[in-house]
Length: 350
Image (spheres, rainbow, N blue to C red):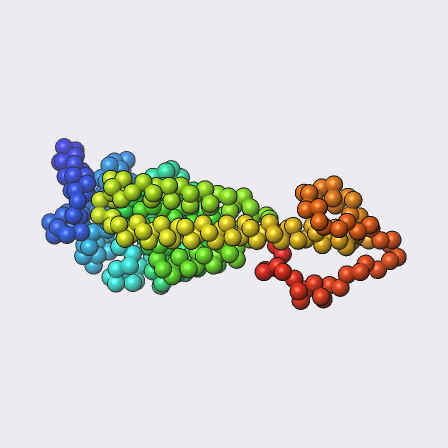
């Protein structure tokens, strides 16, 4: 019996590793038949079959008859380990119309992500599945903040990852922004941005808006540095040329490379613009503090211009230094005038 089980496992692994998984009827039948069996094998300490199916389907989900598989899945999910559920979920075609009434499977996947031990393989499966589920409108509300937090693991998705291509959908970008967690948002960009595929048009626009609105201010400087470094790496890979990229993605076309280059150069320009505007705002604020001469901070404490100058970066010599006025002298400063004539493009964010 054990010998038969080994032969079945080897057959499943060989089938999963071959190309054209979605085009061959015989291969689809093999996957549909062995899929529930592989989950139970993983539960019993033999994960090779499920690992092979998970690796293959993370790149290309086979168009099998999910109507035949869904009921056995419900049965084995009740007995599967959290790791088995996570790996098996990466094989499911979550956008299939035959999966409209599978909230129970989705809830089991969410529960498994909260207890499964994190490894590079598990993180890659969770994040890839997460991005694919989030791209399905009716399934997006079932994703919890805990599941979104797996993005912070920042796993390296394969070049042909379905999760990355689904993850740039505007629905996903808006959902991540709506969490209000800048670490998750930054991690989402670092995972989805890649030299292996173009970004969805709507998702690209949402990303540009996010960089402008969510990453401004001095306190966000270290986040912008990390994002710019990622974009520099992607652009460096794109500049190596089409033949270099085709080693890992053979069907990549030149027009895709050009479009990716244009998208990532635009994202970098947006970030550099936010950097420049933040520096300009900071300089203008320091200039106003020096010209006013005195700044009330709390409990009627005043800080005079010489103190501000000792900690501020040097400004150009043409700026006049006004002696600090006495405490009873009203500074010659009209806030309303400066508000209506302020050269700052956006409100100060420090």
